[in-house]
Image (cartoon, rainbow, N blue to C red; front, side, top):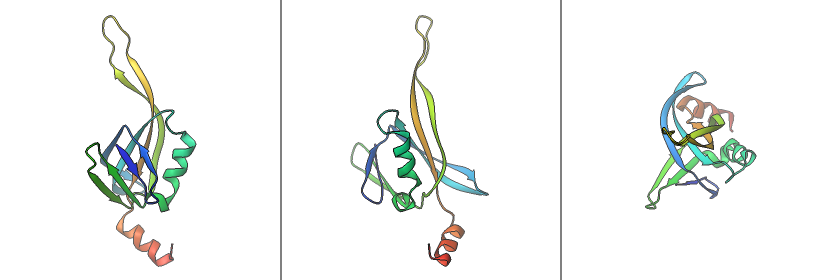
Length: 121
């Protein structure tokens, strides 16, 4: 799956998960982007997802070239490196794990957008 930022930059994600979460005093929609470790550096992903001008509109492009647009996912809730089990252990083999970088972005609330407009940001 491709993740396309407002400035046209495209990243390859393993998966993107949507959910609701409580963050900074409000229930919000969130998107969790999962990336292969080594494909992008932690610092590069940190820079991409910290920039509101890039994340104010995110478009997801699936393998069939369907596009799904998401607006105002400008607040980063978390960014972690986590081990994921890709093959469970059996009675004869140990489990196989891979490290993945997960970035969770949450959507601005209506009130936050109004305050931004009033402050001219």
